[in-house]
Length: 97
Image (spheres, rainbow, N blue to C red):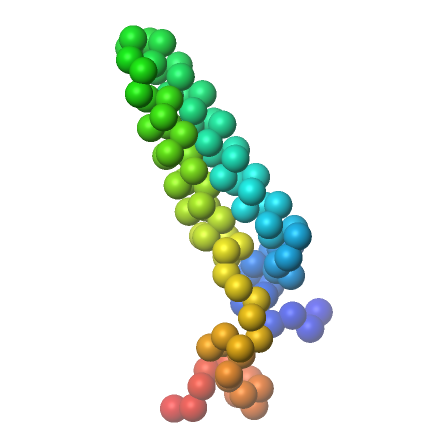
């Protein structure tokens, strides 16, 4: 075993947070905005409208934030969080029963 807790191993290569997690969140959100704005722009040209590029950008931003939250990149690594209050005596990580 590498010494990582099971919940840290599930986070992948961005488990340490900080700069790498920030870049990942930034790229998810910017990438989502670019891709969905481009799709909206194409639909605007196809359907002769003007609002779909804005809706696509908003959808891309929300989708990027959702993906970063789903990958546990938006959580704080604060040592005072509720997860840190558990004692290390329980091997499975569960609190007292």
